[in-house]
Image 1 (tube, rainbow, N blue to C red):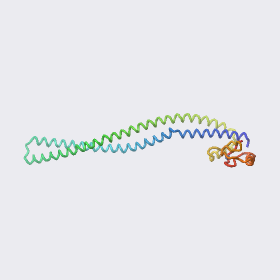
Image 2: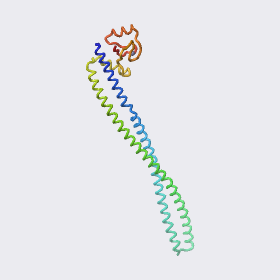
Image 3: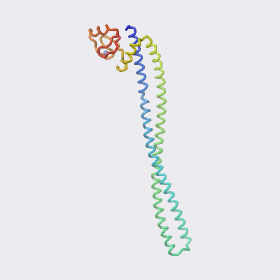
Image 4: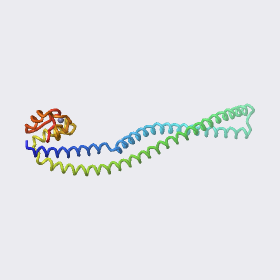
Length: 235
Ligand SMILES: [Zn+2]
């Protein structure tokens, strides 16, 4: 293996590490985590909204029904009272009607209380639903801001990545195919670092020392590799 090829490999390694860092940076943007959290919150709030909206609908239905029943009672009471005031009934009929009116008054009061009770429940339920809707709108707006920030940063990173990929294409040219294959294989199993510089008896990959005898043996080879981590060494 020619020395020039190994030095080229070290250049390639540097570019690949820069690309790795950029890709990592692309996926590690704080805005991405915030976006994910906001997205999950919207989902949770939507689930809550469905439950609360269903409760509100039921209350409104109950209220409609109670108001309808109250109206019927009021009409009936009006009718009966009109007939009572009009007179012309027998004593027994009058007494019967009077008792009926009394009973209707009781039913009406009970229904009025029911309506009032429901009104007291409907208002807070409506406020709760509106509150959740407002929260969702706010989070959606935050999400949209985050999305813009992410896209802007990705654009910058991707432009930088494109430059690095271009540099990588040039760096690849002088490298032997077999050596490149080994390099890629080592990158995959050695945390992305296949080639290390060898400096003052220390491997730049695993930072362990090679004895003078090991050093001599390693560099007698066409392809020097660290005795400890097996990375390719460039002196
Ligand atoms: Zn090593």
